[in-house]
Image (cartoon, rainbow, N blue to C red; front, side, top):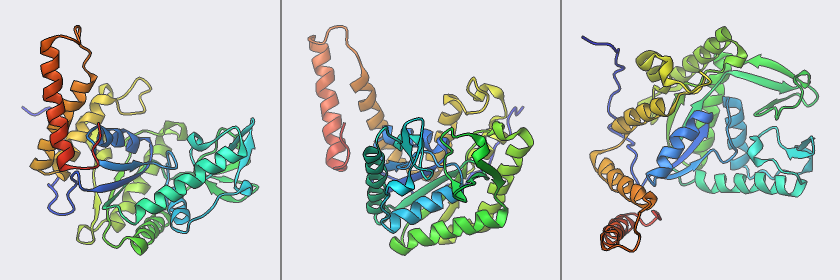
Length: 316
């Protein structure tokens, strides 16, 4: 007897991810959860350099500015409650001084430009099709920074508008990196502040738009994160206490599906060794000077040396 419907996910034959791959991850807070997993297993990743970006226009704007070496100046900042911030970026780049805020923004722009020309994979997780337009500047923002709602209008991106933005993202990246593979997914995080019906409408627009541009023969792929949570897990026990974000169990489940699909057996073997080392480094012995613990440390150093000899970028 089956108590769960399974989503068939074909194993990737091309553009597989291993520890030689260089990844840039952009998008919603869900991509940060997957990014943490990739970082733990010592993959070469840059995760959301401009912070969480929920909708495709914000991601497109960021990539445009990175590729064009845009330099933020004081005219690009807004000041609210003594904090200098940009409508283009998450509040983690904000600061209490204009100089620090501009430094944060421009450093990440330069870092991203340098990485874009070398990445093997761009992973984008779309969170919502709802956007906010700042009325006085007529600018669609990435983040409202808790500025009063009356200063914005709320708009739902149409399917053609999303498709156009995604095409632009692909074209922009390929103008500086023709060999980059693209992996898109839709975040299973429920944006219930928009409303239940509105959240479903938003996700439907994202999914419909994505499937107009997905083409594996052109190295543009889709991974069903949203569908795994909504159609395979289908239970509130896989959500955090807020009933909005997938919990650690759900994220681990998606991670297992992702690695099974996108990574080779050899990559899994390397991950197993890295996992052993990471757990060993976290181990807190009762008797650090004991002979048994010294043997344990020697075995750990041997594993570290073996991994580092295979992959020079891996540092524990």
